[in-house]
Amino acid sequence: MAKISLAGFKDPVRRPRMIMWTFAVVFGLAAFVIVALGATSTKFFCAQVCHKVQDDTIEAYEKSPHSQVSCMACHEPVNADTITFLFAKVKSGLEVIPTVGNTFSLPLNPGSALALNAKEMGSKQCTQCHSVNRVITPSEGIKIDHKKHEDAGIWCTVCHNRIAHDDVAAPPTLTAPNGSQNVVHPSFTKMTACYRCHDLEGKVKMTGIGAKAASGTCSTCHPADFELVPESHKAADWSVKLHGEKSKEIIKEMGALEVEAKKLEEEGVPAYLAAPVDECFTCHVESKFCEPCHDRLKVTPTTAP
Ligand code: HEC
Ligand code: HEC
Ligand code: HEC
Ligand code: HEC
Ligand code: HEC
Ligand code: HEC
Ligand code: HEC
Image (cartoon, rainbow, N blue to C red; front, side, top):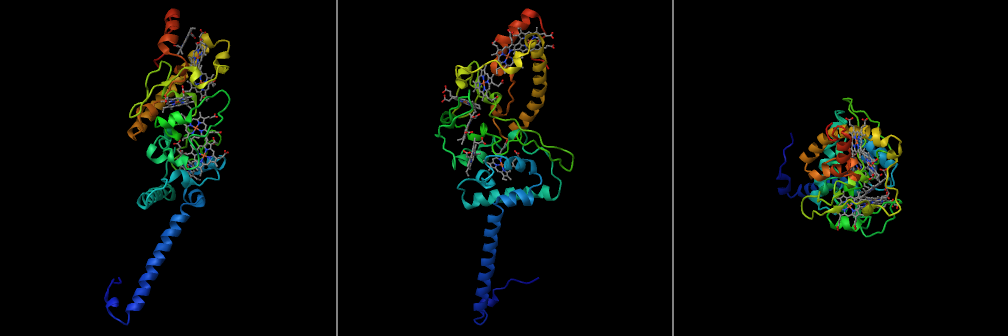
């Protein structure tokens, strides 16, 4: 092994050469670091080089309106100092290991933990390009107030979780070496996800600093001329039969989702954001709407699975 010796610097004849070599090595290393950081920040690197495990995620990205936006714009800290940036690099670099070793397991990011992580996916990631004050035109029949949510400390991906990776539009197909597969993530722009905070009876569901009541009355989010009765209800036997089947189906799904919610909470996601919402109780208050009818008709209680 070559020994690092400072003797060369002491010898007046060898000194200039030693200095030149030192510069060359330092310069070479710096150039390597700069090129490596630059290269690993490109879409080519993220999408083509290391990320087999991310194939489904990238497929959805390619089809999204953000397909011309670099991965790093959303996934690296905004205006980070060098240490934070390098730390993030090393962290994402480590993700390569299971891919290269072909030991990865799916699904990726179940329950949308990343979108619910304000530190990694705060509004700053998005307001680089989008203004909170911009007046948007939502789909017909939906009202949204971006500024009120931002002021209440609610970041963009609490609602826009599948932004750039809409897995309903591009369903996952990848199978991991151990046979596991990706799942379609819930979309937080759905009405059920709004009711993680909004409440029919005006209860405060949010917790933490700045927690506020959010109204669940229909007119909060829908204009007066909006058709409030869902399509499903128009079936002839909805009131006497079908609603019960649908309700039981949902109760079953909720069981699995509650297990997932517990895991999210362990990762630090606030309980109210992790908890799944039973679709029926976005529009109906159980004690006021379901129970009286069931009591009257002597039908089995509705909450037990
Ligand atoms: C417009 C912002 C945006 C861009 C651009 C973007 N992502 Fe994402 N990405 C997100 C958000 C938000 C999530 C969190 C999704 C969730 O939790 O449901 C995410 C999640 C992911 C995940 C976790 C798996 C998953 O499906 O939830 C991976 C991996 C990922 N992105 C990789 C990439 C790669 C690679 C690129 C570039 C090819 C990219 N992203 C571009 C915003 C973006
Ligand atoms: C580097 C700039 C950039 C960043 C960062 C960015 N966006 Fe975008 N966003 C765009 C562009 C460009 C479009 C497409 C423009 C258009 O069609 O109006 C777009 C479109 C959108 C749309 C409408 C299209 C759709 O897919 O629904 C939403 C919503 C959106 N962005 C939300 C977000 C969120 C949330 C984030 C942060 C996670 C984010 N954007 C980060 C540039 C960006
Ligand atoms: C409380 C939920 C919520 C939050 C938080 C939220 N949005 Fe939205 N956003 C929506 C809804 C709902 C729509 C309307 C979607 C539709 O048209 O169907 C929307 C629409 C948009 C659109 C327009 C999409 C289009 O097709 O024109 C953009 C852009 C956008 N949001 C960006 C953002 C950004 C950036 C943030 C964070 C600063 C953010 N949103 C925070 C719920 C939210
Ligand atoms: C993380 C909690 C949270 C989620 C999720 C959420 N909201 Fe809100 N929303 C609030 C809070 C809190 C307020 C009240 C803010 C205030 O009073 O200033 C509010 C207010 C609103 C308002 C304005 C009501 C008014 O009277 O001015 C609209 C519209 C709205 N939300 C729509 C939505 C939609 C649509 C969704 C789902 C896509 C959604 N919200 C999801 C917390 C949330
Ligand atoms: C906090 C916002 C919010 C409130 C309050 C709200 N909705 Fe919605 N609603 C949405 C959003 C967002 C969508 C579109 C996304 C979707 O389909 O889930 C929607 C979609 C719908 C739809 C069409 C989709 C379906 O499920 O058939 C109906 C019907 C509906 N809402 C009825 C109601 C009724 C009835 C109330 C009052 C009990 C209500 N909404 C209150 C946000 C809200
Ligand atoms: C108009 C009266 C009425 C209302 C309101 C009503 N139900 Fe029912 N429900 C019934 C009847 C009648 C049956 C019996 C159907 C059968 O025997 O096949 C039933 C059956 C059910 C069942 C199946 C019970 C079993 O043991 O198979 C469930 C679950 C259920 N309802 C849930 C709900 C929920 C949740 C609500 C409120 C969102 C609700 N119901 C509101 C009348 C009602
Ligand atoms: C998007 C809002 C919405 C959702 C979600 C929803 N309902 Fe309804 N439901 C309504 C509206 C609006 C009516 C008609 C007005 C009323 O009776 O309050 C209605 C009526 C009913 C009725 C008929 C009552 C009667 O007197 O005939 C039953 C039963 C019912 N819903 C059960 C359910 C069950 C069970 C679920 C969950 C699977 C559910 N609803 C989900 C909005 C909704």
